[in-house]
Image (tube, one colour):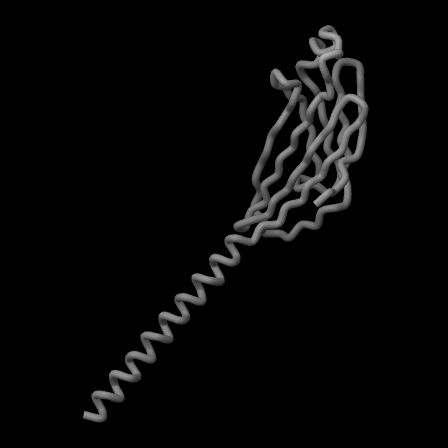
Length: 148
């Protein structure tokens, strides 16, 4: 009888140990999955502004770039008509080590894009990145400073 009781106690302790291990693994996994680090860079020039963000979570880096032409009700229509495409160059310690391209703007004279890269390598992001925008015969360069 004592042997059976001891067997039940050991079995119960074993099952409780397995349950505790599974619970610990689940809690650690939830903690790691919720870990999220975001870097936000923002800046503006005379005619343009830009926001660049990089978020690290779940083993991935996600980046997004938004470029916006600065205009208001008093901006001449002729000036806006000449801005359908731009060429941009993002330089500095960015996710892709810098990027560039010729892109089309939407109706709000804005460009937005994003991408994702595996976070198998830990990256270090600087305090600022450079953004150059070329449109028509014009060019503007300014810094996006890390605000977060």
